[in-house]
Image (cartoon, rainbow, N blue to C red; front, side, top):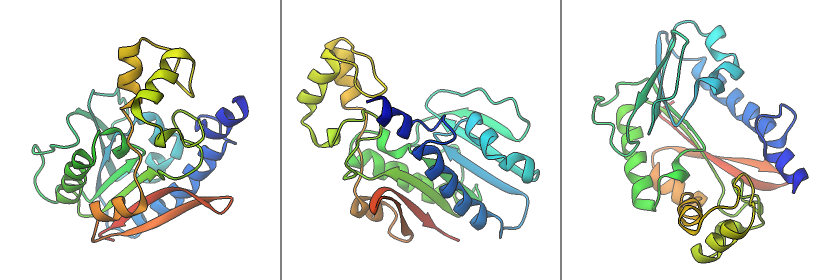
Length: 220
């Protein structure tokens, strides 16, 4: 389990997760580099720490980024603004308000497919372009619980395991907490993501020939 954790810990610069994230962000840089400045970015589910690690703020001084989360995340840099809100309802923003909507491993946390659809609709409404990544439902190792195909287990079995033992990044918890955790992630298939972003293209992110995650890209 420790080996699996080290592979999936994006905080470790040499981990698989960190390497794939850097490669993914290099594609984003390439796309964003062709846009006129200033650029307004909405990061749905993002953090200040993520952008600090990329160095993007230093390289792109004429970029402003709004971090949109259910709860407001601290953001001290002048280029960052933290906003609290529901990703399924961004009615505070007009159509096309942002040049880019960016999201990394967030949409799978929204509940059922209909909730994910609401979020995708809002992303494509408020952004002129989008770059939305999510893990592959059928990658053998579930990225949050780190069990083989844990995402395919029945919710009651997932809850039982989370109740009885430390699973992935989560310590053993009460049954109610375990149930909430077990049902908090709904990984998506490539076909589902394509249904949410029908006007875009889906880029596969592979490891050892297997697709680990997908990124929906549109409007560029």
